[in-house]
Length: 325
Length: 292
Image 1 (tube, rainbow over the protein chains, first blue to last red):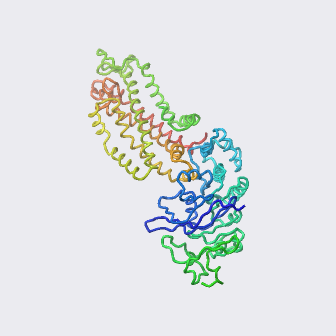
Image 2: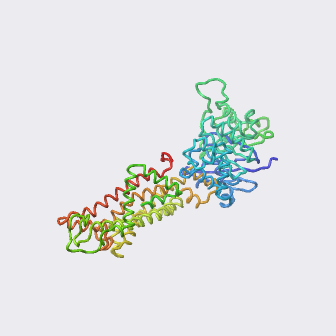
Image 3: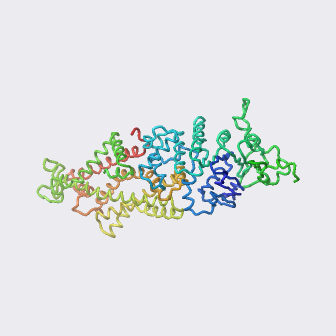
């Protein structure tokens, strides 16, 4: 039942910069099982996008993989050949990007683009067009045959994002990576897209790695959540555990800051005081120590991500109070 | 000059859309008519000309316009109107191959420079800058001195000096596009380099280059006329607008009509191609197209 599809094992990624190595990801470990929706949540700059580019190996030239593995169906993607990776992209692994206004070629019609991404299939052009129309229908674009002839600028943002999802699902991938697919859309569309994604996941049976900084969406959609902070996983587990019994102070503060959780009207919305530490110049000890109101002596050491219960891991010394230091 | 339009990578219906789009714009329509007339007269020149453009008729030399000679005759009694028409053919024979050659080579090199490794980009840019640093006329003089004046020489000079312009534009476009999200999306979908460059980048770049080419054609026609004026272009007695202008310049006190015959076509052709080019620029971009 819980067959592992994607395993990220102790992954560390640096960016070489003029100021020294920027430690963008440190010892990231989590899995995505088949047919599962895993959410990754964290504030801007916590390494979510670096993680995606590492999985697809669409990396900037100054990226350095320091250690760890990214295994897809048991095969390490970091050492696989360029050819092998390219065959995986858009076939077994697909991605939906954040900004639907930018992800389509502006001078080619939608139909042409949808035919083009089926370049691996040997079907005739008419068959490919039929598949494209079927997919557009599946994501709820009315009158798909006529719409195929239109250009990207003739669609609204929500429609374009649905088209992007249709294109990503066309190859029936095993893993769909959704990189903040609703961030650029308004709230009503967000609900629509999330509902659609849920239905499609049911129909196609793919796993989804859903990246967002919107906790409400994650709670609605995902089976499990990975909470990231400054390039490290601070907590991971099932949605229920994480949202009801967060075991890391950062997760707790993050949930408190979600506007959906605020009961009373306030002039100033709650925030987490302090700033994300400089990743090129890491402080010693726990990465969240400077902003944590519960920090104590032991936080001078880096806390390991430890399993606390079935389906919940956290990296915080507060969960080890009873055991001797 | 429908070739420039046909060169955009659209299907037949797209071509029809572009032509109707241009025709709907008043200046575009004027441009289209002028360019159409020039192309028509160049293609059917042999049937249009009333006299043999190189046949001399000394008794009728240096006449003004009349029913027999619409634009008069030159110092050797050759019919100016016939020479203007044939001169148009020569102008297009230089402009079209030179522009399309320069565009094809410039586009290829520019895309390679923009998408390829940094050292290759630097090398190609150095090459382009070196070529551009020669003044065109000096370069032409040197080439003519080397291989002698002829139509091919003019084509070669124009092509060599225009490649950097097209190359630079193609490179800039490629550089902008390579970091755009839809190209990243293509890569994430497993597209190969040839697919990215050929299927996705080319249509984004070619529109700009086609417009540039349409606007460049008058420059080339003027350049050919200029080189012929200096005696570096096509060899006499082949008629050319520049050569006509040169003869007219020498004989301006005897008959002013040769200057008109040589100069007016250059002015009209320049205006026509420029109008067409500007109108094309608005039409080839699907985003600027009003209704389909």
